[in-house]
Length: 343
Image (cartoon, rainbow, N blue to C red; front, top):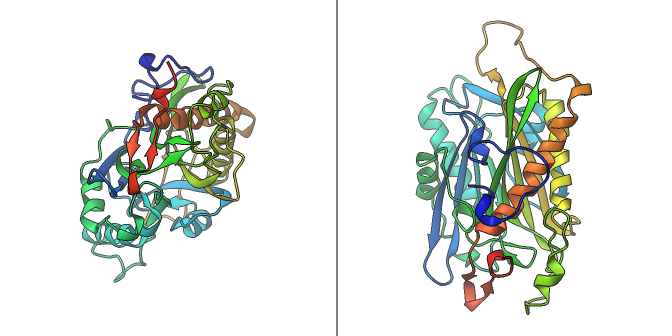
């Protein structure tokens, strides 16, 4: 998956992992539920599990960055305050975040009989983009069972493009959606992985850049839309490199570098959100000791991690476009896929 030899495209200089997906980071899994009726309904749910255990009991260290804040993501305040993620991450459309949060809370309550009784409550992490151009977003077609199904079917192999929460998304005047990529980084003689997953729904028609080539102008001449910059992108970064929450926040900021390289200038109406987590540093919900041992990278050695994080996000965005096929959505609106224009 990711961008393979079939695409004829290579982004940057780094080396992808074996799948070229975020799930190259050991333990990470992704699941989709896609909702389509052949017409006005084009939406869904994507679930990301940072590891296969109980995330409330065994949290992963994390951080976020709000590059442009026109978004409705739920749960970022606690992530930034405590530096940890304690639930799977759910992505869906803007008007379904409440439904997704309720489902995710119920999922966590089933796993943890102590939540809300002998311990605190739980912080559901739900991300969104507006798929209203191609989807009947007011119909609120995402139900709690769809969220639970996406969580249940999460695996190391998953589809990209117009699937899951990316089903109705549009990007840079083309069909957007779910994209992923990974990069390997060698540190002290050991190989580590950085994985990215995006839900792309941003940018103006004509601005697309692929590995430094300004192809958007060529494509725009063949389109009749003139779509302006509105929408959003969710960028998730996972790694098995030991990092502190401060360093993870710095990684999040580099996601914006990858986003800019594809042609975004973080428009007024765009919610550009990055979330990063490491599976190498865990935070137990219950600790017998007053101290928790953590490792972190030397900041003087972090530049290759920055570079590959930006590159993985850049490729994930292009991969979302490459895999998304042309779709006819709400009220007959047509959003063309990148492969119609790139040989």
